[in-house]
Length: 297
Image (tube, rainbow, N blue to C red; front, top):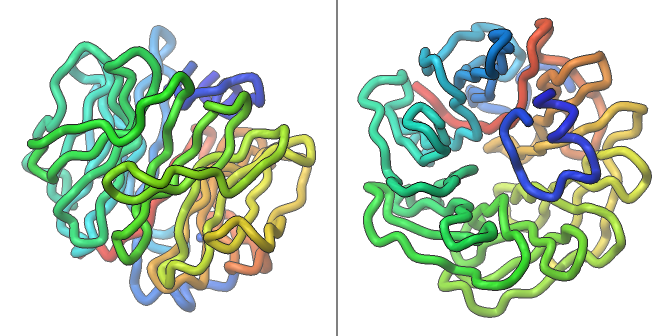
């Protein structure tokens, strides 16, 4: 159920269950964190896992009877920020990269989700529907100074900082369907960089800041695309009958991890940044999603 609703083109917002190829070359010791979803029969739970870039050494980072998902690793690899419904609704939590010292950063009756660190590690962007629809918010890494960056009638989600920290990319359905937008870090100069009748979502900047990977269903099912940061030279990277979602560039920029249901349930895959040498990294009967790279100790 998690995968079906997350993948379906009719689902406009990121919801919990309702929801990187040649070896490790080019990843320079980077790890991948991801969610592993379990159907308990009465509810869906998920935990954050980590693994080496070749799919080995998979082990849990969280061990909670709740839904822990959408992790982002700090630039120095020492902390992980993620969303969890352990207290009733989705809130943003932070922890050390070994899973210790878990601490809640947001506290409200709404859904706060999909956090992402700034390049300095001092700020976090995330999506929240505390004002009705989803908007992009920013806060300090200690949870203080929470403020909205967007304010419109659509849903704004999936925010990520550019590598130089000057801009934020995000997806929005304010114009009817989801497109990729960018804005300054203060929320000004918001503009779309994709324009079509499909869903373009989940942007991920390349480390050099020249490219953005994203998912799109413009050709029927969801596939991974990339483009220049101004929206030009859009190129499709994956081609299969399944849905490929949640792209994430490796720290070297040479690989892209993503989730795919081409083998049945959702698994984590990785490929070269040009789309070649796709490699399946997880092989369980459970759903794995939302990969994110980091130089974890």
